[in-house]
Image (cartoon, rainbow, N blue to C red; front, side, top):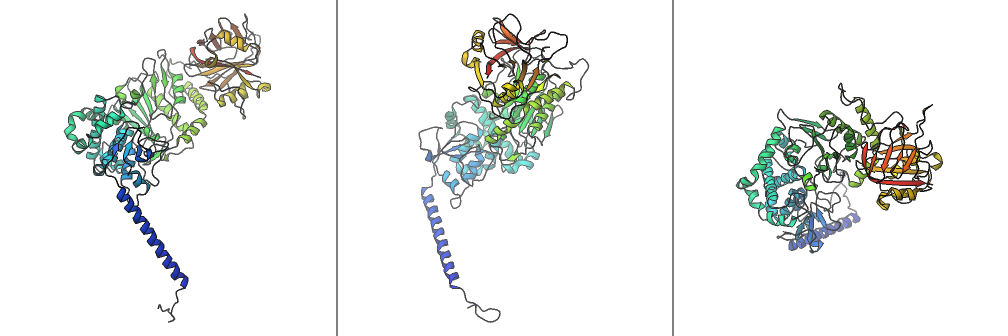
Length: 638
């Protein structure tokens, strides 16, 4: 019995003895349950695993999906919206996530271990990361043996980032477990082996075809090449040499690399387009790459790092390139007909902003192919302007935002892009350019561009309340409608109901039909979208009708909704007849006059024109003075 300092025996309370015994019993039960669970999974453990085509009839409980998402199945993927095991260690690539799951032990692996006991693995596409995820799941012992090389291969394949210098290995090698440059070059050789044989024997990379055939070919052959890459030298050496030469060339005297880490932008200047692995290996740590080549050839790309959940570093939010395309299209001069800056939506895997024409329009496979394998058209805009405006675009869009580890969800990106007031940025940049603040004005240079805001333009201010529409518009956003209601319509009509009178999408292309449906309806809002993406129109205060003279009232106005929300009222000039408001005949309809129409539409409602107009002191409202109509709507406000 314990003796206290005073010599008296300490008495242990009975409740403590009971509590201790109960605790020991519970601990024993927990250990027994855990041991039973381990024995159960040990008895159920599998040693043979296989790939099955995506969407096969095998029950979902027996399949794990990798490198893509699935609404119901278990997943091991770096894609957003996954069903990965709870508590699984994150990784930048799907291959890394599979390898992390395979490392989950039987005792404490939990859900990750049970995922890895599924008999089959599948994916909905073929690329380096998807292939390695499946191969590693099936060939587990070898996968653990070559883990650093496999992890780095997946990074090269998905993000096009190879650690091709000792400095890059020192700075970033730990992300993949790479400890020396030899392992990095081995990973590159193996990627080149896969790429070369895929292009030689199957459909182009990134085409949604023959995924199963590719897997069936490469899965049984990869282990031998992994063990001895030099034995396949004849397959991979051409692409490998191209990548290394391009990477080294970007460090040479004819090239230049700028890194703007605050906005996640790498600006790579080099004479000719290069292999993606050469380019993007100089962009590690950035999420946007502006590639600038001789003869004013440019491409801006949002990297795949933003499309998936990247955890090794914070990721910048992805911005929609369309406002930037609008500015570049405004600044271009002397380009052939039909040539525009275009970009896919920000939700694409890797949006590329570039000049394209009807003769040079890339397929998805070409867009994801290497820059050195596609035509890049020359711009009239000098490199300093392209670089300055791109930086301004990213700085403006990211105001108040911080890079985030794991990236941004698609809901967050949609809300972010919808809330940015891009029209204000577009206006400011174009006006800065006109004043010569982006680039010193040289003698003989045109002092202003055709489509420019005049001193008479008024910014459109939206109403605070929603505007009721009879049916959804094919042209106008909700904010567009509120802007028209708040600024274009006279106050007595600001809260009126909008009735869609005529729409090319619904009613076909017919000026006669427009006149018939518009008879007796005023005021009306004419809205045009041209094939260059510009949206503009006019407020007409009298019903449209066939007439031999101008008609209408001084409340008539013209406006532009995209790329800028601007309004031009009637400009009264003392002593000058300037009441050229509405004009409509069998040959077409127009708004404004006094030399040129602000808006004119031919009788086929396909061709039109917009020029500076003295009636409103307005500028060209369309993407160019002579335009083609993509869509047209006429709304009656009552």
